[in-house]
Length: 314
Image (cartoon, rainbow, N blue to C red; front, top):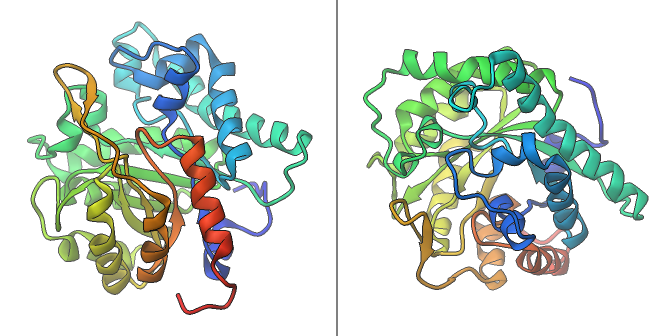
């Protein structure tokens, strides 16, 4: 893999805590972009790529160290529904990484000198279905079938040389098993993050059983949770750290609930920067936000982590 930053993300995690960005979709929507279709933010890769770079830059300016690309719902199958052939889809997948790299360049032009990294988003199979099944899992597919779905996209993204592959919002331990097989040999590190409900995956598996396989995969540099309620994070962090011995990644949503039929969020935000210290103490080393967590919250996260005394017990 081509090195774009020094140190590597894995080295940075060994030395301290890294700030992730917030939700891509809410940042794009706040800039006036309509995401009300099945491709969600991935549609803008083809139609308004400069908007994606602007969203990444907003998070770097807010204090994020890692930009997660707009590829969550970018798949060969999803693009095919829009008449985009495999070559065109591959170009858009690679573009998702290039746009985040462009945001890094613009951040440098603006005087941001701290290390910055790019994480290529790899959403679950259910994200391609665009029916809310990424919050349920249990697709009726085998591990082999899920591996065959994910591997071609992972190969294209790895060739685009991100710093890490973000295997994110995984609802089901079976899909995690497929992803862990699919990342082997790609030459790019990865993190694995589940979407959870309480002390289980969305598909109902106990978290200690779900996290355990990642402990044996060298490509995985962090394990954790994302797009879950903030109150579900601390137990998940403790479990992931204990079971895998790896750094933990956490980026919950605001605590609002997604209504798949209405395609809208309901409820109020329960995400506060005050929760960050407890997550770090439990083992979290990559900390940010997911849906409905914007640049203001990321700034608060960055300030909270910066205030933690260097060398203090983790």
